[in-house]
Image 1 (cartoon, helix red, strand yellow):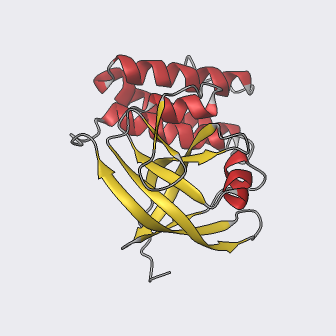
Image 2: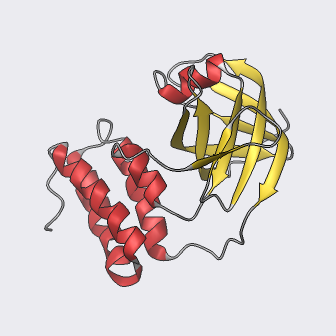
Length: 194
């Protein structure tokens, strides 16, 4: 893979299960020209699907409910068939990349899959994130690491991120935020009332 920078894009990676069912998961990826590096944790459904079926889709979306939903058991998002690979992309994607995976390194705790972009499709313009959308994505990352972070760190971060939700959230962001707060509290960390 060409020299990578440290820029990580938060996207939704859609893979196919053995029975052809689409599985969408939030993930940070690194892109360099026509290649993309995906590093799923092991074990995970994304890892198993990529190991078996060496194609996937990278979805760019501003609907942060997809990020929050993947972490809270809400995964039923509509998909459409890809044009040049055997795969699916999210119906609400603003853009998507269709990848053929060409390099696989089975490292621990994360495997590395390098994919070549076979097709890149723009569906709608990206009008930018508001602060609440960014806050939901940051809270989703936090939620995915609850077992790795001290409780005080989680509380401090949620308290800070809540300010953006209160000031700039629309209905979709409020819904996604509520899912994440419920997940954090179900884990045993009280964050709803600071």
